[in-house]
Length: 257
Image (cartoon, rainbow, N blue to C red):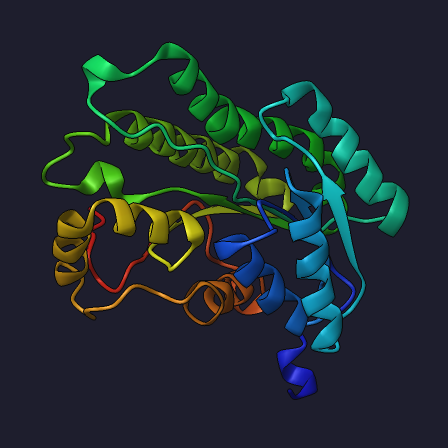
């Protein structure tokens, strides 16, 4: 890789849900561009494996931290650990998720509340905690949304779509409020072969087959090559004028109006 492609050298990226799937894919791609990674997740062993893979590919230092993002009060301490270790923070990626899928009448409030705590509430809490550090040099926030709200048939996906669209709204607000501080905030709406998606496809094979058929490129994305590589570019100086956007990384399935 040429020096020109090492456009994140010295930067520090905090990624939640980095122990597997899309989170790991993004961590690997950012590390290839020189970023130090803070891999945060509920299962420390998975985050340590992400760090091992980064070291194996010759990447910079990676720090694995255990955290449950639904415990909102604990999140500022995670940011404090990042600053204590690296003395800076440049990129925040809110990727951890808890999905509550099913008909509205069968939704249990504890599951709905967990979805919102892990999704928009944790996203907001981490954005607030990271803001003073991102402001120092200018920074980048990427939040995880979904095209579930764009489905022509939203049966069984109402709660999931609601919490993801709440995250989109928070992201747009952050882009407007913090743009003058040179902090960019964007959402991605990805389809990728993460363990969660693979489990869904296994349990709903007919719906999964129709889902893939509805993707113009006729395939589900790769966590690193299709999602991680784009996210690395979105964090780079080459995307310095991209702010407040919801970008579907789904092979052309969603129509983002």
